[in-house]
Length: 357
Image 1 (cartoon, rainbow, N blue to C red):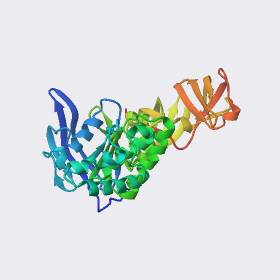
Image 2: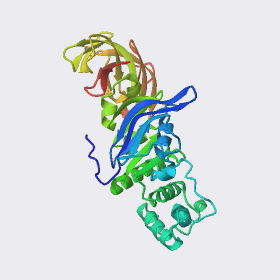
Image 3: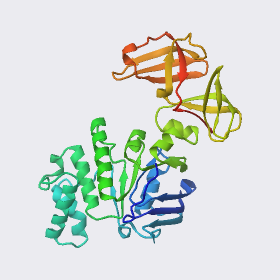
């Protein structure tokens, strides 16, 4: 899938952007283009530099080197207030003594707008996030999801060129997170605003993003669409970070620059690879790409069930095999195997790939 930029939105362009704190480099020199009107997620483990990068875009941190442009304008040395960006924080940061309407209108009034006009614009913003009529309430009278929407409305009312989200759903329960990520995605698409979104939750990133930037050790490990990162990872880190994955070692016999035969303890399968030479390789196997068969099946990889868990819609297994432990997600939960059962393993055409370490 190729993202089509929105010509009415602002592109964010980072050129050799770097952040150092003394001798510690929090963000190594990197180049990144966030297309106009896209929702781009910065994803990675704690300490990888994603929040520092977001704060540099916001103007809350000054870059040590490099250039940062928003909508074609160099904002590298501008303050946060001069950049026309808005941030939605993890804590929402709503004023508890103010009504919802006053919270949303606060930035406009602080900027010199008269109260009646600011309230009218705040009402419009609340309507855009599905909170029409909630203006008189206090934040304490709103649910967590509603408070999240108030925070979004407060950011949107300022008409930002770029909207920034810093772990916006981490304080919500799992069901509400699913609902809110759908709302954020729908809202972003309807408004066409450029959004930079930070999370460490892979499923959240897959659900909301046009593009995902996976960060590791203060630099970009890979950037691409959710499907590209899940199905065509460049390396073991990206493959194992983007959802559940088994990592084993095998031997590749390259047939072309893209395909070859992998041998795993005698078991062989053909798969795609990224121009790797023949020889030992890292093999990543998605749990759903493993099919369990009768252990007497010709050509299968033999294994034994170590644990079996019934999960309702599917079953989960941990297998002991000659190539190592394998985690399996099997759809036939009604045919639950037991710990100690001998099984055969075959692999699907998709969800198995050879990658660089």
